[in-house]
Amino acid sequence: MGSREERHHHHHHRHHNLVPLAALISREMRNEKMEKPSVRYGYAAQSRKGEDYFMMKTDCQRIPGNPTSTFSVFAIFDGHNGNAAAVFSRDQLLNHILDAIPRGLGRDEWLQALPR
Image (cartoon, rainbow, N blue to C red):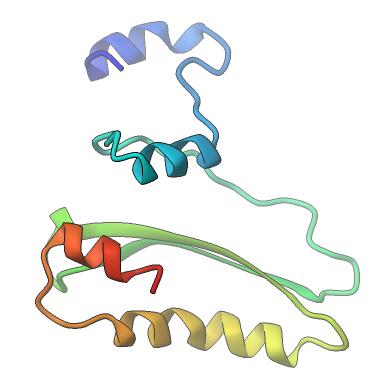
């Protein structure tokens, strides 16, 4: 990837070093770690019926109070037949997932427990 200065220097190249999320995930699955990739994100085109809900949370911490354990969560909740399930999921799902992960795991163990 080069140093930060190098990346900044090449910034005028369109889409320089952008990698699709799917490629990052498959690299992780094959254990080809990318240390601290920069993530670009945004949202647009909210659904007209207001039945799509999203979450962009970039300040989660695996170890509360430890900024080096920060991670981001991105999710889309699609409300079929009304929005109650989407709203409930948006508000509750993340806490339920994080509460289900055993406490005191190291980073690698935590990442392995996350999909389960």
